Image (cartoon, helix red, strand yellow):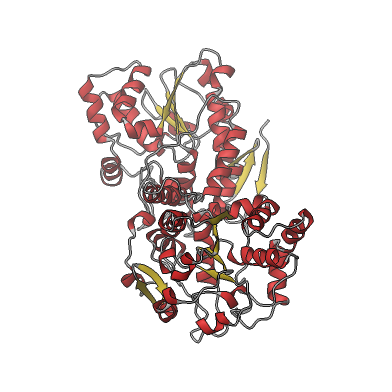
Length: 607
């Protein structure tokens, strides 16, 4: 017995229903009630797919294989869509019929199994399916649609959530694939030809040959070549739009791509964030454990905007940056530090100075507070913010006023530091963080924070995340390339013999703050009782430090942020980059990172 339930989900402009547990367009309700009793011919060929899996492409290939020549079918595949056409309309089709459907095996006509019809099942990487399905549902408007609305008005994130939950028309792709993969165990002796979309893209001729042999319709090799050529994406798109009879075609509004969008593999990498990709993999593994089917993780992908942008400092200063930037000795800097850097190398340094060096957004405030507590021997917060000891921001006179031992913070490179630092062999703690998390935190800081004393009342960077990431990877952000920064600091001992730095990873501090505090204390020759390390770790937790910095500390050297700005403290998490980077961006980042880091295999910067 068929059970039908109305669904009300935000974003969908077409009425949806749940039929026997599967989400469907309400327009299919009546046809599905009689679907199991539909007549089937012995020579029928069924093309079964989940939506956006290459259905049009394969349907055309099947028609040419049956015809034995590379000639396009007169009508669109919609003329043979099982769940869209009436029984009478299907009866008018000449044999052998190539019937296309997105239905599940449990919804198919019973006679299909009895007559052992030929079935070709095409599957595609679920992530590419999701992207293509979203674009189809959110960008296409049919001319005969009285509302003139797209089917789905929500965002990509909302659609993806529905998709992974199976709350889209035709239900879950995981359930769909699993069900069709298990057909032979339910209907013994039924032989299905499984075709992978990605395999057709890689070697279409081989897959056409395989389908032909399955259908017992082998052809000369040149016919396979001709069919492959005729069914190339460009040729098929042109033929479908300009040659075919449009009787059964959906008339799309001008500007809509219709059924043909890109025809690529790997485009999902430009849409899925890494976190979304991992969640999809997790869901996939959970759903697909019953089927001997492995997700295709193809290595090839379309280069996206991140890999194509390589802006120079002179160009990007006019493209998103509201503060003037300059290039000093090949490193991009805020123009405000120009004068300070002119005399930096000759700055005085005390023997007991402790330098905290880091690339921006690597946990500088956090570590600076820890170092102060280690030196003080107790878990008490300093009076001022770390900005009071910022080497490149404070004047020589201001730094001279600080009591010893000074804990001086800087984002400068080793070659920009005071010469006396190396002569006096001062203690240096270098903090590094996963560059991808740095990129995200840096972007949020530059694009979301506005200081009250900023006369323009603008954020520092007004561009998009994609634009910022391109600049970041190119080193075209204040303080330059994070990879260059890490490499130079990791190589200090080779340039300054006998100079020892304490290199600390942000992720290690998040995992075991006590252990890293102990390690820094021992490096500074200031060991403390174990209980003190615990107290310092607790005092310097993200929540406690954020609260005290904003409400307790003297604000003399603090940047007064506008209300609503998170200031220096945003999330304090690791792996938040997975919610920002698309897979393509992550891969491009890894490629550039590895390319640079080959020059320094001993560098410990984590990715």
